[in-house]
Length: 451
Image 1 (tube, one colour):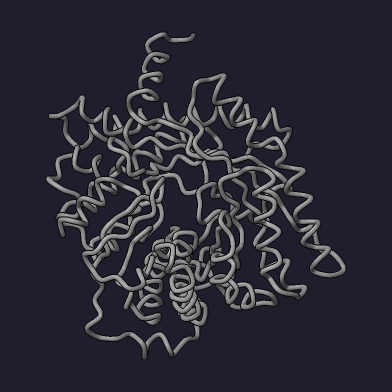
Image 2 (tube, one colour):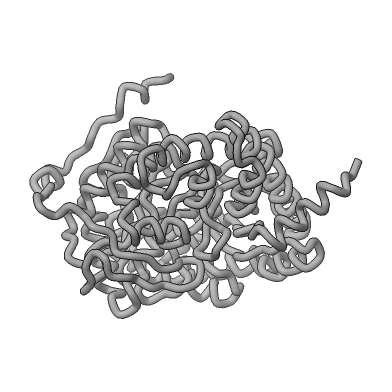
């Protein structure tokens, strides 16, 4: 039976509390696009993407208009391009084909300029990785990701070393645009195949030929719900978050099911991730402060974030049998108004953020670091974060932006959902270079032996 109060509550969430569908993402397999040469492969890639996603943007706009639910982004994820690049040729041709497809379909981003090298490099992987700085510099809507570790395989430290260099080169290559290329590049451990969120989305090889995923976001809704319970204990707060997450996920399930039907493709998952924005009232940090922390980043922050992340997941899985992706709470610094304030004031430090990644959905996300940060330090940051993911059997990621020409305390400005924020201090007094240069592989942990 339809409950009028539930309808009015949802309307209020949308109009007053920044509830939205953050993205409808169509995953498209490109495994059948291999041709006799790279130019014909690129044409097949372009043709398939534009054919499958021809009506994606319009469908999202139609659903948004008919149901009154904001759908912020319409995106595409594709098979990791390194798999196609294995046949040879310049991977940059694929980047250009993807950009042409993005232009033709009108989507915000295409993710999947990616490689999976958690156990080693195969044909095409290294060439694609080395092309990333140029690919992200010459395109506007392409996102890239590289998976360098997993709980089952350990950490590929050769790839970690290479990715530190790649991140640094990407920053230098786009220094004239506030190093924007690094905002479109993610390094993963335990990457998932059905992630609808950028910049880390790619279409896993275990996915169907074409599928629609939905990413829902609602930090403002959760914060507003907690405001109504100023004196409840933490168990009560967990229940409120679970109930709120349930309602948000049901909305995502509705939109995903409808988009799947209209586009004639399989419905994949709802990713219930509290993905913040720089807008006031849309902050994960402010949720933690609503729980009782004076500011995000002080002692107690990790415990509060663990409660939030767990309650979001529990509420989501009760609302849909198709919850997947990353689902939880994101903590991207430049994209969260509360995180930005806490970093500016010095209450939120890089070391505390690393501790928080042990219990959040992803990892060190959208963090600006001084331009002088060398490649080996970036590699060491990646290695530390990958170790947290590997040992805890969770997805972790690093998306750092070396702000070329700028120092700690200065600001980096992106605008839009990518936001802005202070350049955070990095410990550069001693070097991890000797450790990183050893390369090789960190073996999988004992808990990987679960067969």
